[in-house]
Amino acid sequence: MIEEQEIIPIEVSQLLGRVKQLYDEKYRIVQIGCTKCQDNLEINYAFDLQYRFVNLRITVPRSGVAIPSVSGIYWSAFLYENEIQDLFGVRFKDMVLDFKGTFYRTAIKHPFNQAEPKKEEA
Image (cartoon, rainbow, N blue to C red; front, side):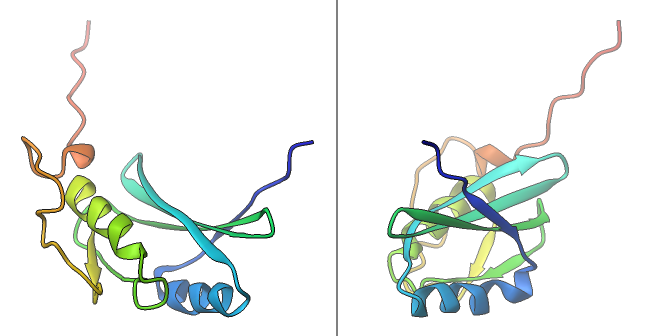
């Protein structure tokens, strides 16, 4: 049996309130992941309570946005946020521990958020 996983799209302004609500309901944070989606980035926050997953999804522009850190609610989130900050260039405000771009050593800055190469016409 495969359990349906709920994905709830939210606005950045709703993030801290929704995360705090899940914390108060005793959900544990499972993972925060980021991926490119056309001209935007999707950031997914996964939570679990008794093997029931709930995912909050925010969609943000690929540059010029600052997202409030959830590490004040779930302390361990600073690991995911530093990773996303280094690999995608997303800025998180008020992290409990901010490595300021030095969490990973990469040959190029923000390697997972580079412009796509232009395709040549045949």
